[in-house]
Image (cartoon, rainbow, N blue to C red; front, side):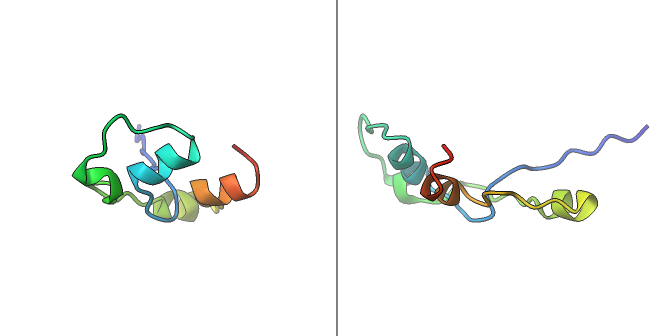
Length: 69
């Protein structure tokens, strides 16, 4: 029996600093990596293709703008 794993991630890259800002979490101490993108980028392309799936809010920013968080 085959079991597939699917990534469920934002459609756009999001930095750690972006997430902390959206959640109103103060950074204890800034680091050089706060404005860098995640070290590795995942894709949800296969999830969308296999299940004909589209997110209601494709990114955390879209969800914030729609007051959905």
